Image (cartoon, rainbow, N blue to C red; front, side, top):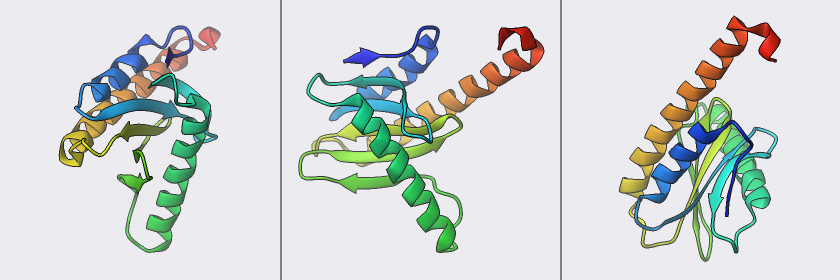
Length: 137
């Protein structure tokens, strides 16, 4: 399933790039509250539940990293019985990549990071646009 609010087609491109990595079966951009901003997942996967999982994993990873004196979170992963969850924080919330176990994490992580940088750039551009034209809010 591919869904995304109107006017956010730039977000979809970053998610689709992740799906180009062999073994990646889904990607979700979620807010800190666990709401999906954009998703590209298989029909049998629930994008709202995945968005909530992305937020929870990202928040738990960030707290554990900070409380352990380990610095800021760069990535958190969770291996479930059928899929691997990989979460990276972004300005808009959390980026989740889902993969099966055929995916090479060493290929997925660089693409996730590139996608995260693109999403952060898009968020800055949106903020700049809103700051330049307050009536657009």
